[in-house]
Image: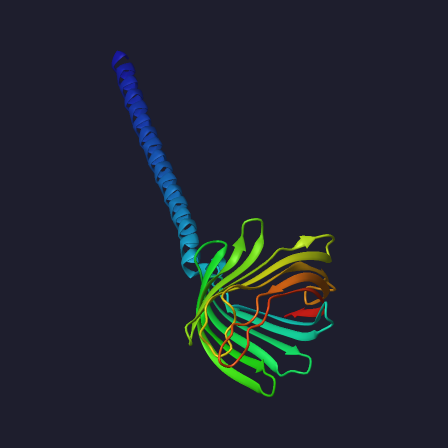
Length: 287
């Protein structure tokens, strides 16, 4: 009887050990499967993050950043026509066309200006300028100017065609003055400076006052019909315009002008300086 009980206990112990071994093996296998699943999930997340991080790189490589840094080509034209009279009731029809085409950094300017005095032939000049941005507010410009001048003498009218090299600055001076400053160098020892400055003062959203300043300085001129050197012309005044739209702007202006006159040469007599009030009405288109 004692042997039977010992045998039963032995069998029971062996069974318990086997069951424990099988359970431990199952637990380890489950842990291994769980660990493998966690590794697979982490790897999948890593692949997803890598794909997501790579997508912006690919998008940035395919994205044209030039469009965000002033590389778009645009064109703007302004046509300005005005009738101007002085204190002596002498009238002149002034017309100006300005076109700019290019990017923010590189532009091409075309400026054409004409004056048609009463009972006289038309005078005009044209500039072709390359403009390069050198700062946020300034462009340096270089190019050429063609001048067609009409000189009315006592018994004849003499016309001259001249060409000048041009170098200048275009931009926004302190206090928001839009500025054009040029140096001219041409034939017959011609050298001159010009300065134009304007500033917009908004009275309402559509009614705008614009003070202006125009100055011409002759440094040297040995032409047949030379103008006096020094400050040869200066005009200052105020323009008042009403913007029917951004494309159509009628205006009136009033100002003061000083002209120094012409030099004495073999082809002309010297003239005295003059001071006049200037009054104009005009229409400006922008497109």
